[in-house]
Image 1 (tube, one colour):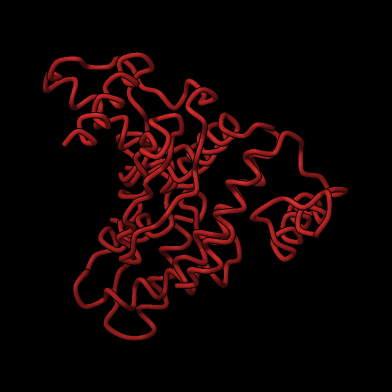
Image 2 (cartoon, rainbow, N blue to C red):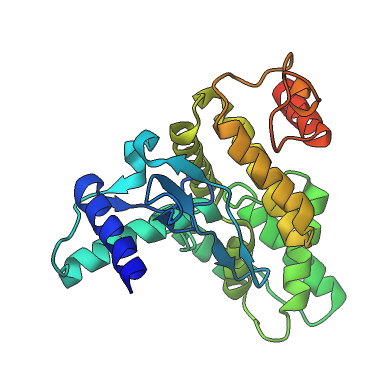
Length: 286
């Protein structure tokens, strides 16, 4: 009981002085919390449950409370029960932060643009046989290619949309219904670009050397991809590398990247040879 009261007191005092903790700036979904091990001197991310893979995703974010950027705090701090309007405002902030992780921005992030809906209504939509499904997929790709973030390779984009049409031909009979699934799968390009910019801005804020933010973003994306494939070891390797790079006081360049994974004075903890080579590839080729 005393331990619980001490933890609660730490959180209350910290919030009163510094403001409410926001969502994690690296994964965008985990809830930040004060470390119990050092009495709140460190801010950690608790990770989050990823419904797409049915598994809890850990997050390596860790920052000394005294060095935490202002962006990790939300104001005001409520010393009394917030009103319904204030609760809704807090929920809106949370949804926007989570949206940044999903490539969506704002309250209308999941909405299909009206011009696409009107275009879908005009499409010839007959998916009772193979030829009809092929023509439907071609028409859908032509409609969305400049707005939805489909693969830049036309063949891959066609295969992706074709799979959506085939998998849902029995239960979704309209072009507008398939359009919603396409947008859900790939997202709106403009919104994803805005979300990526917000992610990088948040990453720059937590990197000791802001120039390393794009590299951290790339490593984080690799970690997420491996997680979705079920390769937990590789995923954790890249997540640890993200945490290590955020603490570097110098920019990772083509000249020093490989040295971060080699034994010796340039070696950085949690960065192995393979990861260092990937980092070198990114800073030299993008």
